[in-house]
Image 1 (tube, chains in turn blue, purple):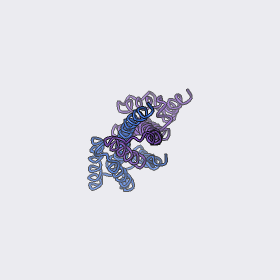
Image 2: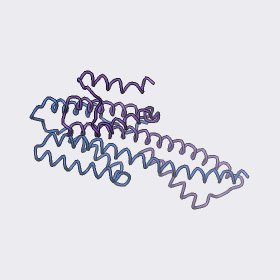
Image 3: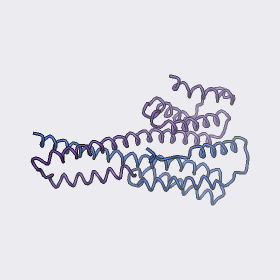
Image 4: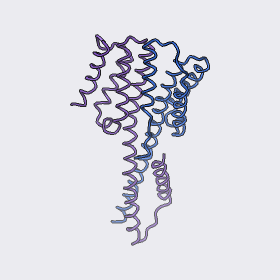
Amino acid sequence: MNKFYHFRPYQMIRSISVAVAVIVTGCASIPAPTQQMAASKAALSDAVHAEGSEFAPHQLKIAMQKMNAAEQAMADKDYLRAWQLAEQVQVDAQLAALSARSAKAQKTAYQLQEVNRVLQQEIERNVQ
Amino acid sequence: MINKLYFPITLIAVMMVSGCASMPQSSSLAEAGNRYHRARTDPMVTRLAALELKIAGEYLNKAVLAFCEHASDDVIDHLAYLAKQQTAIAEQTATWKTAELLVNTATIQRNLALRLSKKLGRAPKRRMPIRQQTVERQAIELAVAGINP
């Protein structure tokens, strides 16, 4: 069970709270979201590692496009936009990784069940 | 029942504290809320992805709070999107864990069947067809891949 993917939810929640506080209070200057950018890149790389391009290509493509847009926003010093995009990349990439892992596990389960069916027939033939 | 009531109560509390007069009318927020409530009533999700679902609820609360505090549509839509995706993460986590459990069960069944088939194979000796040997090798590889994704 320990192999299940571990998120860093509270970090995300905290960063969102900061973003909301900043927006709600109308504070003008937003710090560059470097930590969030790093967390999003890590999530994206995990999705690639989980073979997201094969098992969840659409979701992964969207996450990659948003990551590019976030990097562009960072370059333009539009930190609010960069922050929002990077947060979205993190959830999109996590979802892509999970979808890929689900699809792979379902495929493995199906193939194993097929093998078991063949083995059962073999055993039944041997018993007869 | 207590679990089902949990979210509306928090939502109402958030709305009261923030002075939100009416239920949110934002379409992205409504969509996120509907998805979240659907996931909350799915016993597989509440059992296998409780933490992921809790985070989705927190995102939704933040989105509602932003709505009540008259944040811009952009901010509300962003938080609603995070709530929606996090709900999907909870649902997908439950699907994944279910599939992993199936893999584990099928692996145990296969190992038992292989042992039994070996035992039975001794008298009279019966060789496994080549095609089946290949299938089994693939199954072992897949099982290993499933255990170490």
